[in-house]
Length: 257
Image 1 (spheres, rainbow, N blue to C red):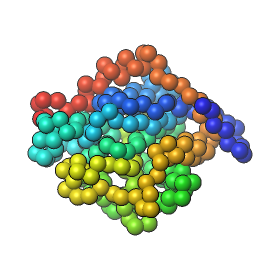
Image 2: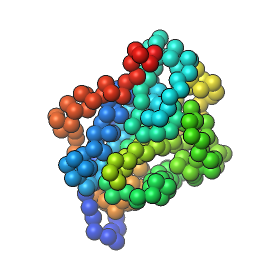
Image 3: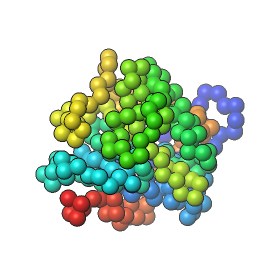
Image 4: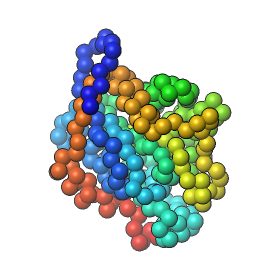
């Protein structure tokens, strides 16, 4: 699929669009990190955009997150969710009934805050196309925060009622950026309550359709990046092999449980 903008004020560049993959959480994290690594190991300059789903309910922890509550360990031991680490920072994110986006941006602004602001503009534009108004949060960042969705910083997006709708995190390597984020759409209420002790965010008047969200964000990211053409480029066999080999490094195994 190649998407064209109706009006071009600047020359078009190509961006890589991966098809939506449903994989284990560890594989998804390994793939995000691999795509970022290719920027400097292979000199790839094109941005990469992908959206993905999770094979099983998963709880991802930020790379600096050390505290794992006993409740989460119990849920993992009983097979109710998978525990894994992210290459990015931030608090814990429950991936179940949502859509995850990932952007590899080789030529991102060097200032972390500016990169967040730009990506937020594209996320807001995409949701505005669906009739959903979002704005950056205004809470102060809290180092060591356990639950990503318990507070909303300028890196996150909230609706007019202040409900956090998108939580994002960054991972930088040699000036290249991976930013990925979770969009909870229909999270299971029982599991969310078991993990975080409260109710999941509800959409009103209705939950956005996952395919409509994906299409709108593909357009808005393309326009924002001046890559008016996204080129479908599936994973190569080599990329898939490397992803599978590295996935184990993101699983929180028996020693953590």
